[in-house]
Image 1 (cartoon, helix red, strand yellow):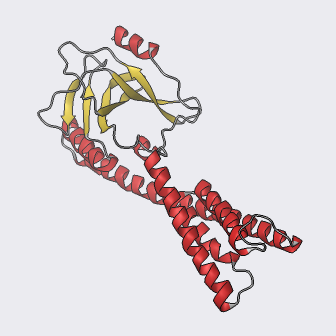
Image 2 (image 1 turned 90 degrees about the vertical axis):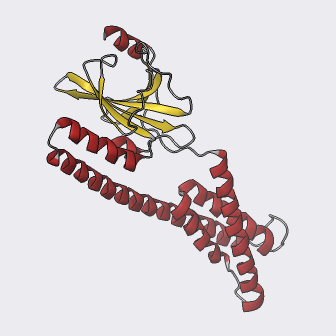
Image 3 (image 1 turned 120 degrees about the vertical axis):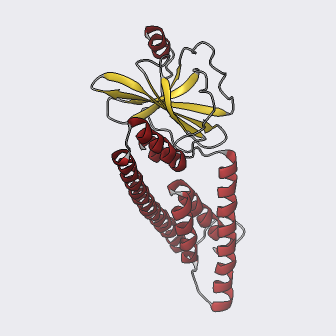
Length: 275
């Protein structure tokens, strides 16, 4: 037990101050976001050209605002600001005299352009904040529902093993993990598996994994550690990331809640971490 704890403590890797693992902006998501922004700005520019040429609208720059709002609601603040700047440059280049140049002759046009940029950025920021609040409220409501269900599972179980089995099954369905299991024992080497969503499978070997810890500020952090492998344990699958939540009550270690997650998907979100 002491050897396992020593190995675990010695191999910690510092994490970001926030301690939270957030979904990453990978190349695929960045490219799709740029394509969406480009398509919206292009379609809006066609609409602006029609409004100014056929309808006679003197300044149709406000037509870009809906595109900024749409990007803010779906992608967030930074893409919304990028859409605002792109709209500003496109409108200046194609619709402000002299056209096909970024030069602006009339001072009033500069004022109009800067006001448009300011309004677009503010509207995009506010829309993104509202969308984030809405998503957070939805996640909190979902978490509350899952936790209520877990409470019912535990209250209705006849034995501890039955209750834990229900809980790991519910967590598997709610967290995008490929496997969830629970072991009881005083140390990581002595744990006995009492519930496992992959029945008949052997427990993966101990090795590099993420352990959930609570930082000084109260936030939760996944910290990468390396545990001593149990004798005869099977090697862990290289395409799965392994996670462990220590089960501690009154300073006494009871066991661990463990999970495997495909490396091909994003790390656990804040919602998954809280669950």
